[in-house]
Image (cartoon, rainbow, N blue to C red; front, side, top):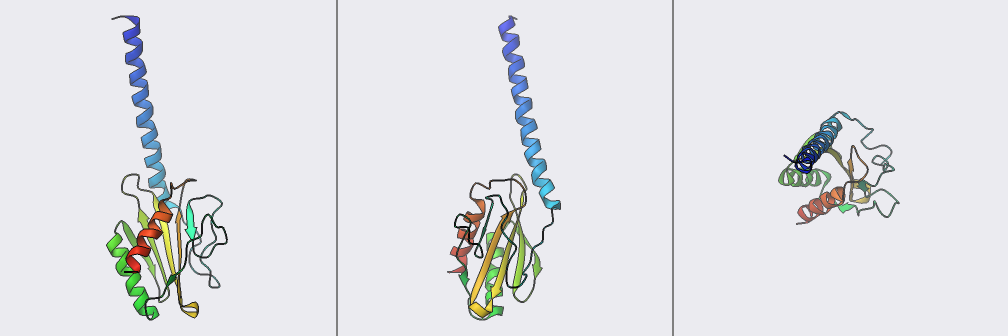
Length: 159
């Protein structure tokens, strides 16, 4: 074998090793995100504040880049809760971890990398609205995943 052939072979092996290491690193981040807890829930009529990173959306933020519209209630609070749960079930890839009369917390898990994202719904009966918050647990950018999740949920919910 020539020196060039040996060099190309080693370059290929190193490149493959780097790709595999990168995949394993990001997969580890997804698994690690399952262990992160945050202060979620409703406090004084507000869902948790937005993180400094761009990987979240909420109907209760003044940050235009992270703002989504609150949704209208679908009848009573109980009927609205039922509708939210039905939409979550239809969307799949999530587990409802907290369910109260006016609040739902679901955890979505991305299929490939296993990232965990928190999605919250607050049935704000005083204003006849459903407040929404979706946030990634790790990373900086979500490549629009939380906004896309809101759009998908909104489409199902308003049917």
